Length: 126
Image 1 (cartoon, rainbow, N blue to C red):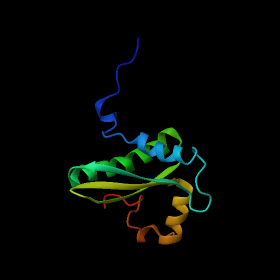
Image 2: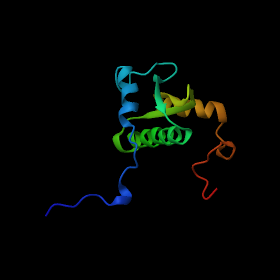
Image 3: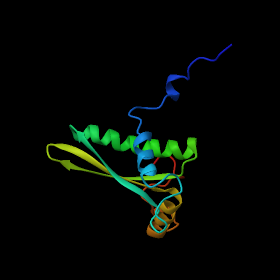
């Protein structure tokens, strides 16, 4: 007997921005074709957001989908996003890079003491 659909709490929250992240990777030539020194694949811009809340939701989606691609699809990507005004609307400028280079940069910038980081993944309930 076939299984039913996945439960609602397992469904991915929209908007799903995997295609935007993969577009930056493909623009550089595919996975592993990042810049050798910086680890960057490409920098792209999403425009046309009516208000800041909509742009913020898409920014969160880029981070969520990069994590999903890394954990579930085995594509080691990291995303950095900057939000800004674009005339009367808002835009997101996002940079997609290699996860290994991103970790190296973070450790060089903030050190190895996780208590001093802005976000400590091992800290609970903070």
